[in-house]
Structures are given as structure tokens and as C-alpha cells.
Length: 160
Image (cartoon, rainbow, N blue to C red; front, side, top):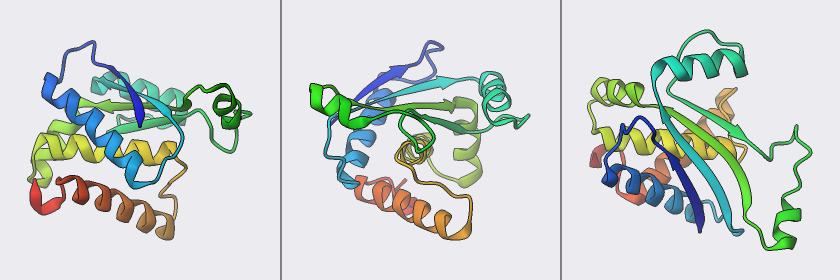
């Protein structure tokens, strides 16, 4: 089980779409056998805001579709066993999604807004777990896992 904090101050998404995000994240957590109670936040934002975050945190001066900020990556001093010993959830980190990108990419790829939203949520979630796509091998592993999760949830490429 994963606790999901949703931040949609711009009221971009419907209550059904927000529930989809929670459901997809819980499904993804099961699919990757996340055994520990965990927590993640997901923020939905504008293209301008994600552009600023991308520039500030990654040094890339353009908007992007999704950003992930892991709290327990190998470069941090975070100790997930500390939370487990205290009975607290494992704080995975934050996912930030540009809603205009969801809309545009759904149209570009010819599938539903919900499928693209779920794709970006799973993509961000896998980054929080340490998956990456910096080289061909990593990309294949990550994208295969993404598609497996979406397919088993019912939002595979042919099901949207």
C-alpha cells in the first residue's frame, strides 16, 4: 500500500482522474513488490512552473512532462530502515507532472488523457525507485517495466 498526496491547486484534474493516479500508483507498488508502507506526493502543474523546476534542479532550460525528486537515492543520507523501525512510511519522494504536456502528448500519441497521465505517473514512480533511462539498457528495462504495469492495470497501448 502506498499513501499518495495529491497537489492539484490549479484544479486541472477531475476527481476521477485524481483517483486514477492513486489507483495506478498502488497498482505499480504491487507490481514492483514494494513491501514497505510508502508515501509519495504528486503535483500537477503548468508548463511554466515545470520549466522553472527543470531549469533550477536539472540545469535544463525547457519544460518537460514529468520530474521526479527521490528522497532516498544513492546520493542522499536518507536511511529508509529508520522509518520502518519506527513504523513510519518510507518517503519515496515527489513527482511533478505538467498537465499541458499530458494533454499534448495524449493527442500526439493518439491515446486518452488518462493513459498518458498514468504513463507519466508510472514513469515518475519508477524514477523514485531508482529506475533510469540514461543508456539503452536502462531505458529498455525501465520502459518495459512501465508498459508491463500499464498493461496489467488495463491501460496498455492498445487498451487506451
